[in-house]
Amino acid sequence: VRAHVDDELAHYARATSDIEFCFPSFGWGELWGIANRGTHDLSCHSKASNENLAFDLGNAKVKTMPVVIEPAVGLNRLLLAMLCDAYEVEQVQSADGSKSNPRTVLHLKRDMAPITVAVFPLSGKQDDQLNICHQIHQHVIEWGYSIVDTKG
Image (cartoon, rainbow, N blue to C red):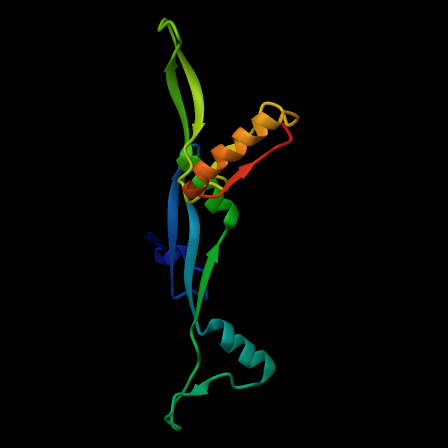
């Protein structure tokens, strides 16, 4: 979490903080911004509409203008951060051990993976394979959201 310094604040903001993520390719970037906009928005609306938008807190002598707190989040930034966090290039030894080969892996957290297990038969036309796929699916269904594709 990074609080903005005074020269970074918008003219209407009393305070702003960002939840940031360090992206591997371009460094720190905002995931979620939270701004205390003060009474700026409602004061401007009140002035433009000639309506008093302040309200009584139970004491008829004092009226209060509500303060606006603005959370701003982008799904695309969150998704990019999740993918960057899960992305890894591993080095895997060849079968004979003579060289190391790169393998790209996406280590999604279990709660983030849309499908935990997918079971596919080699051919969708053979009943014995379809039956085995359904049996496997019954064993792994407790691991999370799973599917069986019987098209082959």
